[in-house]
Length: 136
Image (cartoon, rainbow, N blue to C red; front, side):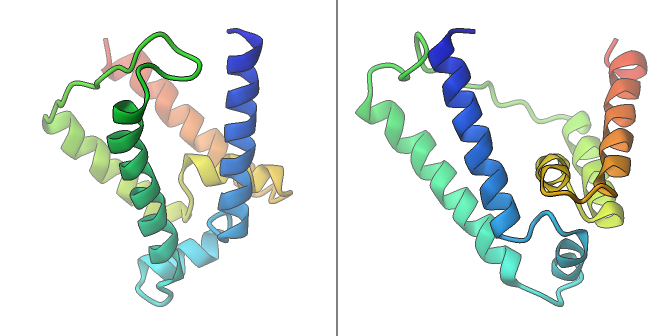
């Protein structure tokens, strides 16, 4: 990985983590309140993230011939299968039980919420088990 790419990933990750912390998505109790329809504040966070991402994916390839740090834009193939449904359901159950998803786990650990190490370890074990036993 080139230095410019590494720097872009580092800056992007830092911005993402800062945004997650500022929006309180790194606090499982806030996320659980949102999932139980008791606090709708995270709806603005999720909606804002979707809007920014949608604009980026739709506009940037039209405004630029190639990515700043890559050779060309790649289109991800649309695949929808039972694996998508099962994976989404498992993700949702895990999110509802733990109150965090992968990005906020790392950002929360970075902010000093050491209890999230347990969720992070469990996510790692789940991904490892999938890679070892399911995706052969």
